[in-house]
Image 1 (spheres, rainbow, N blue to C red):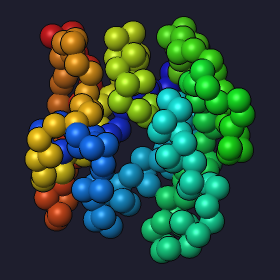
Image 2: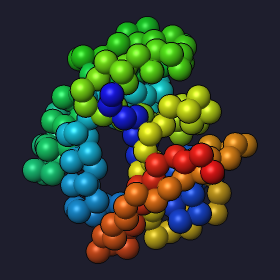
Image 3: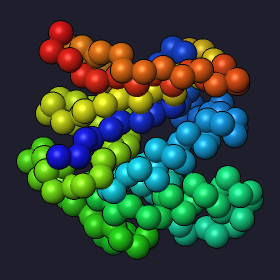
Image 4: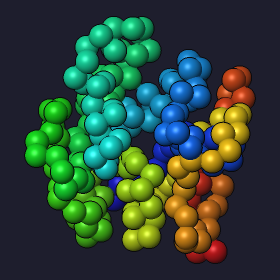
Length: 187
């Protein structure tokens, strides 16, 4: 069975965006971008909420984005390759190929996806991932911790629940970003 991995960029104080909804402080570091691309290449399915899907769809719908650099082209190709499942009550049709819309989050549906998959699934969107945490679906958390404190905003990890984590690995990038890989534990 494939795993469900939740990768996300967070500030040192744990936010994915600041109080104004901005995330312009995310890394421009080539090594971090390459790590994200490699993770994307390993995925067979992307499981997203609507907001993140709409933000990421530009990697397929805007060819100029991929034309910015070889690294951007590699990421765009890696993003286009996996199947995408988007949970949304408001989208009527996907804007990208190989994408299907599901109306409501169903933990059993995600378990079925995991059981049938031969490659890992990546889940994106903090609110959506919190639902997966609550249902016990997350197999791995990958936090790219940026060396910045934004003082508030949208948390990258679920609030209102306790989730024990076991450190699997860590990697430091020259930019000061640290990748922490965790597995949920029974703590």
